Image (cartoon, one colour):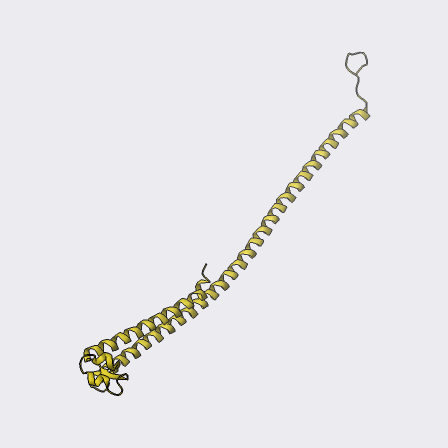
Length: 191
């Protein structure tokens, strides 16, 4: 183009080269920033996933440890329950055996009473027993000594049954005390 045509003069080659160089540089910086951002986001996602996996692994280890402790405690508790159950069964068996023996003893004593092989006696003071009935006997030698006196058959049976009932109550009390003594071993101390 001619210098007088009204057109702007052409830029020099070095200016054109600078502009394209700038574009390339800006494009390179943009690509570099994009790559850096991509790497950073990838590292962040990788770190996040790695952290998540680490947390999951920690939780899994903690869960396994807790399950192992729970199973050990459960086995220990079952063993304590079995021992407690065995002790209670032994106490119950001993109590039932004591009741059977007491019943057999009561039956034997009642049979002896009814067969006149056994008599219950109590001692009364001579003066108190015969006051007013026979003053000579009361004043005689040995008047202060206790004189044996027998019970009626109904009274004897009543007293024997009463004593047997007292023995049953004592056996029941001993059985319940053994049971109560066993409770803290399983349930823990009171309070």
